[in-house]
Length: 239
Image (cartoon, rainbow, N blue to C red; front, side, top):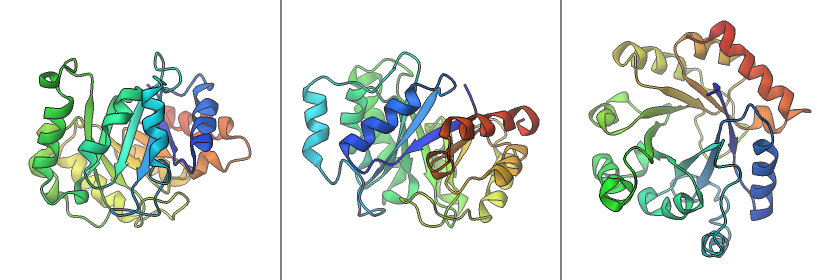
């Protein structure tokens, strides 16, 4: 699987389908992150919060996310009650759920609820649904340390204001990654937000596993070439 994960922040059902159709046609894309913003935990609200009936209609109609045979879909759940919000996305074919540590008053309880809902006890195959924790750049690592045995990856936000693409990179994340990697050398780490070709090199050198990239790809003159350029960094800077 490549190091680059395109991020899709949908503004409408049509925008959502158009972006997924584009990325699913690029052979090198193996994983896509879909950003879901509720307008409460983070804002502004994204689709489908702006049209909640549409996601229910897609599930009812039996729709699936494109090319599930080749592409892994990851939901970045920037919302309250994320364990409940995840359900329709799993019905559409998503298999990775990223829960934001700050979105719940009791993070262990949130993760336990997700395991009950989407684990083997709820008739999901063992290991089918993968869980991760996201942490804001200004939040202490201590918040997630007790929960690391419950997740398969950690996502550090590379921007101070989450929920919007195109925000400037916050260099505090470099030190966060360095400290975390020293403590947990084997747990996959991904960075989401503000990634450029220059800071990507340093992130990969520090041991980052994946780069979740939105605007640097979506706003490029040729998104496919931009994505390939990021992928090429893995050869020289990845560990």
